[in-house]
Amino acid sequence: MTRSFDSGILRLRDWSGLSCRPVYVHDRAHPVGGMSWEGVGGEYGAAWLVRTGTVSVTTGRHEATAHAGEWIVPSRGRHRDRFSADAGVLSVRFQAVWPDGRALINPERGVVLRREDSRVLTRLAKRLERFVARSFMQADMGMEWKRADAVQYLDLNRHFCAWLGELVRLMAEAGCPPTTPAQADERVLRAAHVLNTLPLTEAWDLEWLARQAGLSVAQLNRLFVAAFETTPKAYHLERRKRAAEHLLAEERRSVKEVAAALGFSSACYFTAWFRAQFDAPPRRWLARRAADERGN
Image 1 (cartoon, rainbow, N blue to C red):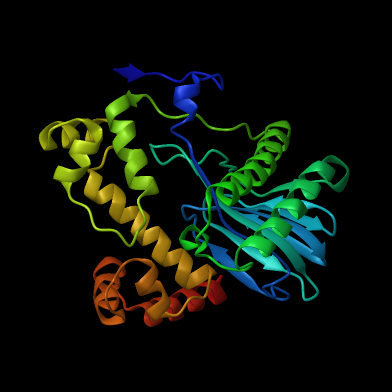
Image 2 (tube, helix red, strand yellow):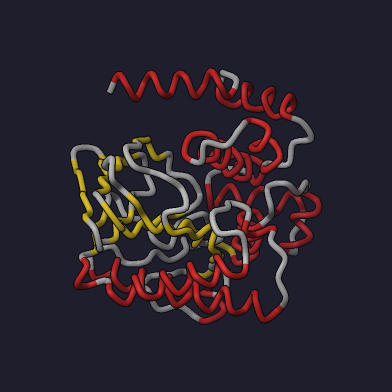
């Protein structure tokens, strides 16, 4: 069955396909003062509450700057983030994506949410950060691997969804309404949802994915290409590549740490894979990227 989504009003079962989770939440645990980097448009969204100093996001010729007490949400496309020397932020990194890979919050450029408009968002973020700091390691990308009982899991999602709901409302008021899924066969959306939520450390094959979607391998490939103009293997490869770029360039993870996060048995295997995808080993790619940024 094919579903077409023409507005922001969907069936509850359609909303259940939205994959939402916090990736990390921390308050000034990572020093960002004086830093600048180019965002690579990874699979995760971000929002920063500026505690001190200023944070600027440049997308093309547009620059948005947030001051203390304000939130700033960067573009999901390529952009540059700059933090003043005295900057400190409460940072929320999260995933909120549809099975077809569309981000629920997908601004074309940086959006600033003024202090007077975002008091509830700030209160909910502080509550979420306190819960995460109390229950899990605070400044950590690997929240999905933390152990929790049912009550902790549901409490985490209660705090996170309250914050995310307020963020969606404010972004819509700022002219960036939430996205809805593309038109596609529900079985293909199910397969894409599996690929979006599958831990990058886990192996899979087309036969297994086809069974999850209730399709044959041939049907899965045909319908997937029709919906997303790419194969399931290529779709998942892009997710893995975006994660590698993000972890290396924005999270400043070591090659060994990135290899483990992406499911490689050793840094050597990861380096060989990375070279095949990006035409350079990780360290050379980072150096080339830094040189390009200095040149701009």
